[in-house]
Length: 337
Ligand SMILES: Nc1nc2c(ncn2[C@@H]2O[C@H](COP(=O)(O)OP(=O)(O)O)[C@@H](O)[C@H]2O)c(=O)[nH]1
Ligand SMILES: [Mg+2]
Image (cartoon, rainbow, N blue to C red):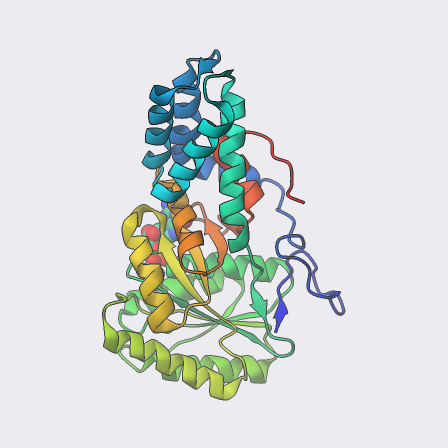
């Protein structure tokens, strides 16, 4: 399987698969969007940490370390990451008077080590259409994330077809059709209440016949505990796999960053029951607890492929840990390696 490289337009053949993240350069302006989106979490993290210092240097003692732990935990980054940062600061800086930036550097280094392994480019078909199945609970941001992905692909010169596999609600089909019209994508839809696997089948058929580059299938929201609905996702996957070997190339789980710890049980459940291959973390702009991306990235062996920071079609980018941390910690960063 190949990897998607954004920004290449319709180049002949991409060179051998690049290291994840290197290929896709951020669009101008996205760092600002990311910063604006992450402002609530950034406030907890960098503002609170700087506040502990009250501007000047401060002695790193146990009281300081407790306050630091509190700020870290408030971002929802989880006890393991918070403990590791506190331990690192204690070991290296205890009984010294340090500058806030030294502590923020430690946070940045620790979080980068935890987030970096979760960075991975989107898988793509070596030839023919790349098929992406999009799953998640109700309202997590699936349809909006499909719109944002479509915008990225279309901007890159790709022809996109959408499958309106949320046949549960007529409004869901209309929402996807509205985006398709706006973004210049084709859409395949079925009768309300029809089998979503049949819509997926027709969308992939049309993608093959029409020479589309990307086929994205929307699905109805469901809970990881609803085994009949998880089996329905399995059926959609099998139908697609019969048409295109290796497809779906990605089964993405869209997580709502405001869902807190529920996001973790969703990641676990959807990976096990629906064979999800990657995560889109949506609504990072709506939460002061964007730190949840840390346990999401660490605990399930599922790469974080994209982050969403708003409701418009432009508010999605591939997940780049360095850039993400720069936005979160409002500082500069040295690219890894
Ligand atoms: N603030 C914010 N809102 C979002 C984001 N993604 C989706 N939404 C909103 O969340 C709501 C549900 O999104 P939708 O895509 O319909 O969810 P679905 O049920 O999973 O398909 C809508 O009002 C979206 O505009 C995001 O990244 N940030
Ligand atoms: Mg939807």
